[in-house]
Image 1 (cartoon, rainbow, N blue to C red):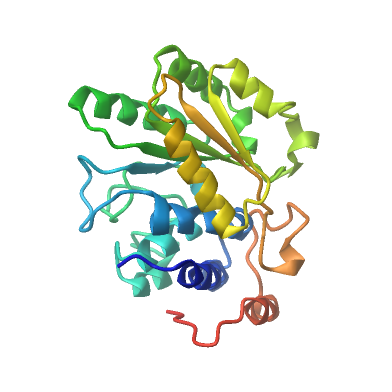
Image 2: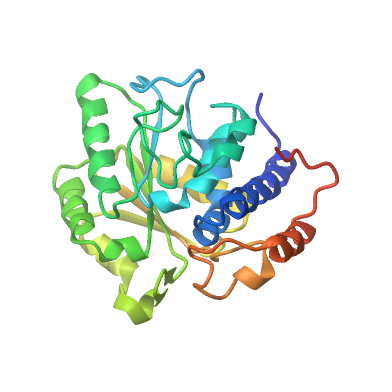
Length: 283
């Protein structure tokens, strides 16, 4: 059943609570980028993407999503669970021995919703393009979505894939960049500036859309829907989605410090007070 905007907004708060609970339980994981991308995942699975349950690896005549920056697995796992791909209770096994929910997504345990192993940065766009080409060969009119970190764009393979997509007119793909300006070692501009990314992507032959309010659910839904209208025009489509790392938890925002650090007991309690729900469905 389709959820209302208000229900989806409540769900973003629940997903953020899941993210923090998961990384806190094992004192390990990547909460910053996960919290920043919560609206994107909620919009994609709650309003934008066409998919079916139960999940199948082939996903014929369905839209596909590929997470390239696999370290933000907590938000991916929570979203999949909350939208019915697997039981919510399984989130409690995150990063534990013999769990299907490893720190970076893997396929060998058959976790529903996961079609590639990811985490080695720079590879996801190449995979997504291969699937997009495959769909065209099969006469499948569905779309392929991918998500990338802005720091990930420092990887050379990304730029090879960007060139390929435009040269081969792969126009059934929508690739979103989580443009939060931060990576594990600091601000992206300080580590290795991307310069004018909008202009670079356009120069590489992509249709480029940009949304400054990447933590506004309705704005994210709108930009994704607009991107869909740009497909099929002979060019791949990119979205520059400006988000805030650690969004929703005040002490995590404004810094790269929480890229890969878990909160302690006191910090978790503080975060939950900020992410208040009258009737939380915590696992």
